[in-house]
Amino acid sequence: MKNKNSFVDPAHCPWVGVVILILFLAMIPVWPFEGNLLGVPIWSMFALLVSIFTSFFIAYVTLRVWQDPDNEEEKNV
Image (tube, rainbow, N blue to C red; front, side, top):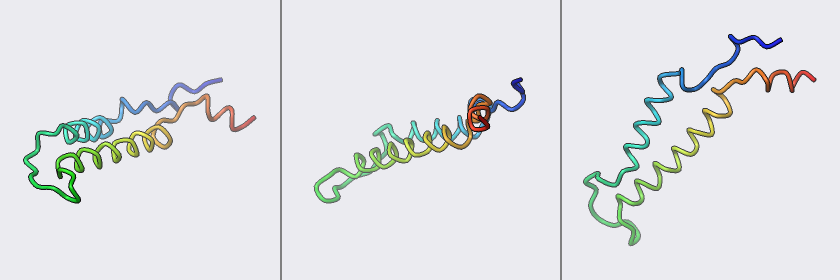
């Protein structure tokens, strides 16, 4: 029997939404970075690094925060 209280949805964790919103806003290339680093504009390197960090954060939330009771039943079998 499934325990409905054991399900943790990341949408109900306010810190997950706040971090994702900050990361998506940081990816927008409107920040006043000027200059080049190795021939690449700094704003594009910043946007690329933020998008990589966003990918890692989403993977972390999916693997660690999101707890589905169906997965627990599969491990016990």
